[in-house]
Length: 256
Image (tube, rainbow, N blue to C red; front, side):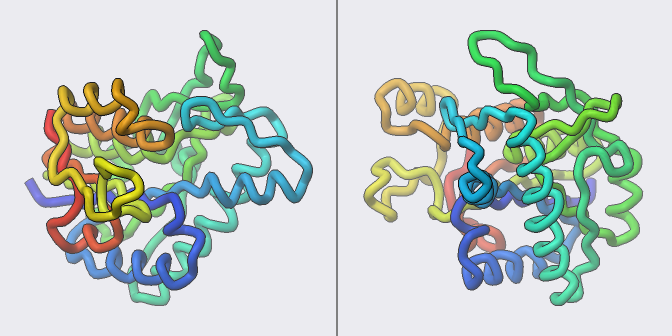
């Protein structure tokens, strides 16, 4: 199988011009088929505050009411997505920005109400792999934001880590996929106050122990849950890393 690299970027990488430029520069240098997936929750929260819309989070996941969905769509699918595409075009990387609704690339269902009503949040059901494979074979670099759709005209806010993991899983039938979740840290830290305390690898058993003891918590939990799901689904390589890990063997490698 030919290699494919999927990079998900988020956190503070999107907030600082220099760091973002360096990250996108590294991504553009990947000399193989590649996909970029991005979040942007902090930017969405900032816009929500300006517009007087309260941001609600539970266990690192955003509650998405109607007003929040409108803001998320504008920020994710509009502002951030097109900024990233334009940066890649500057670097001679022929990118096209997508939401899940474009080309029916990612279809989701609205998350059922259980203990928490997450609102207009989508759980991915289907990936249009045939169209994605065609685009990748033509040298197109897809750039996905965290908005999907339900096939009935409803847009849905969808966790960007989940989108990256789902794309990696779906495309692993066609490519040898390396999935990297890239954020401002160099990997998963044993001590959040010590930037050098990076776990070089992490097993499911160790993750459960560290989570139970509060060593790993908050926003890292959705990221790692998706990382382990991808690894279990036969994705070749899964890594949590910083920008330096895009081109180098750095970060925390996930083991099933």
